[in-house]
Image (cartoon, rainbow, N blue to C red; front, side, top):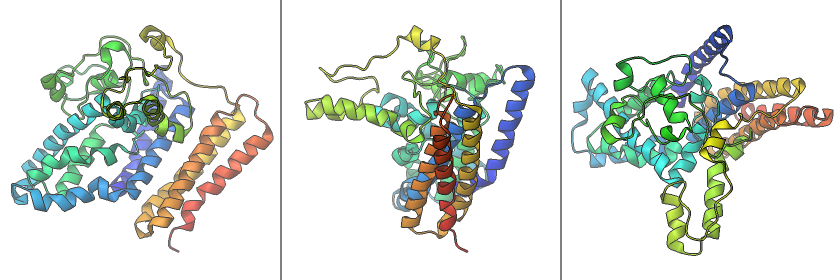
Length: 379
């Protein structure tokens, strides 16, 4: 799938540029430099994880489908078969998405996509690194009904690409479409922390699933985006590990084994008896909190862009040639990618007057690590 995403990346970036230009022209810029780089960093990391976990991405489905299929694969040929596969994928994805908000261990994998306090097309590319790793069992009903692997993958791409355009504030209500499909209005609700909007509108394509299963909410008040407990960091590793760290704290403080397991599978907000909650803002205070955007000098911001572009460009080259590499090379390059993106994030958190030495070291480290993917490519 990463090959398809690489081909689509120029289109995604062009759409982001158009959205940014439109917002500037209309006096409603919905982008923030640091936030956008952080979202795109998570997108790159998710592709790196996908390369390292092919078995859990589609391998298990491909292995199980011929053995458990109850219907012939020929049933899914042609246009109607493809549309049926997309519909089934959308239905299965609804339940994976819903569980990912209602069960803590799944929320830990999914939370990355919600951490941005902006809402724009770059948020759509803020993909979770471990969401697919956790979610593969939810699609086994498709294997039971005989959907072949190529149709399963195609349906996944269609559902994924559909969700790109709904991450924008520049498209308003769309009448009857809002009642049938996931639209920008419906998906803004899903990304908001307003109390009436929490854990609503899970559907990827058909919002009818939410209406049918009682999880729909209509957009009625301005949305405040992010997570109930804000990330407040540009550290890509911290973003991935934020909720896992909180779950580990709860489990460590929980005396009973059965409660330790409940921590993982109950609601993300559930606390075992006797475990103190971390201080957090009330709903009203959370809605009033300003977006996380620590001051950084112009030099630091410029260098962060340079580091990210170098890291991103060379990472794309690595992803394009990764199928020829062995596991050690993939692991080493993924580590270099993470470290390089960390450098870009650290530059954005370096403060309004960072020392020249700090800027130079972070920039040099980021650019050096950006070259690591090239070392693994065949000549």
